[in-house]
Image 1 (cartoon, rainbow over the protein chains, first blue to last red):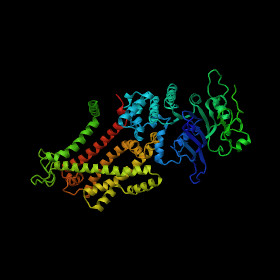
Image 2: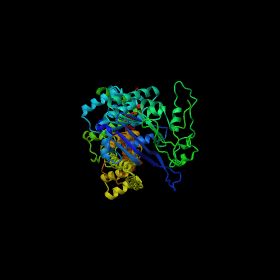
Image 3: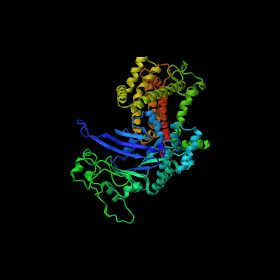
Image 4: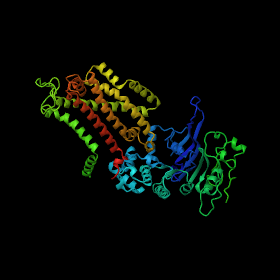
Length: 336
Length: 286
């Protein structure tokens, strides 16, 4: 192994992003903070796909944006290829963005409606001063071809394409810079199922061809299992469990992961053994600052004193780099 | 390809009769004053003492005024003044007000507060009063009237631009440009400003009308163009005193000029906005 590949491409270390919580009384400003991302740590190796899984409102998208500094993190460290991103001045940060791109969930809103597809895909090259006009044009055509948009349609505007085609344009826009890291923020959740599969296959194919590393934000567990090498399961901005996808799916330890997996429909099993979680994700008032973030809805630790007093730390469990943040890992098992 | 485009444009203009009419009026109002004085034999200041207050005839299509000056010649020169002042006011207001709006919208809370309070102070004066005060302070005349009107139009542009920028900068494609690594100047120039064109076009048209009307108003109270100068507002003032005694042509034609210029500007801006909007119904393939 050469020294260049020895360090992970991306190291996220106790990343935090909190927002001032709104208060209904303007004369009594709230000191309470909404911790959207609450100390997430993980690493992404070169060429692998790391998944961030969780339900709506668990801080997945905020984490993605904080990693790319589209929102300023309020704590923690992100290091990309050994470069500390949080401390970077605007201009070096802007230049670094060539190597780390993002594919957005909302392909309709993130493509400027007044620009043609060719201009949209060419823009990243212009912005980073890559190649002359002829070289850029050739590159744009090649990229469009690669994602399956016929170059003769390149003069059209985004709204003249279907949702799946727009997402392909978004992917072409991110990949035309030949980045090393691509953050995929739910790239397929706005698409219908048949198109989802096409886009996923396209992403996998491009990863193999271009040697990309992905951070994949997803709420669909089936997709996560198919697509990710390693995963972190998030709840209220904290990592509940992380590890290799195959390990996590075959041997889940955290009650939250177990409950989520029990909700995934499987061919050949009856759907009656779902574990139903009561309540909903409610960041404020659940006492997230002390104890386990999940305890209010946890079938195992709801009434146990240690779950209310101590926040569990991520500890190794099972095989590989499988870690769990739970006082009673493995206690909840899905009914066979 | 090029030819197709021209033909399509022509067909679309022809299909939209209101637009065609507005285009025709605008062309007449622009070409007339540009070419008219060189084609029309009479000068706007030449007096024909033989025919004061003559009714419209072949020799004088819009009649003559009390000093026997040809109203048509004065109308053409007046159009030049009015349209030029309108254009200057729109440009100055757009550049000054628009810049203030962009800086306020992007510059953070302190810059925003300072700039917008300044604009509030400016907007606290009724526009006509502000234009009057500036004109009087700088010395009565056409140029100072134009400066006063331009200044009074700055708050309109600044507020509208700020609001638009605040709205557009939260749209997802702006975040996408940041993620792409675009420079701030590029984001403003290529992604924010183009999206303000619809509102700004409409605003330009209405300020254009406002400028012509206000200039006429200032001329009417004697603060704009001075009497022998053939400005539409001053002509209306001069003509009004004869309206009761039956010489209607003196005030009617310059008034009609103001009306047509304002209507044409608004219609053009309206259609231009629709044409530039990629999603407007008019742009769908039929």
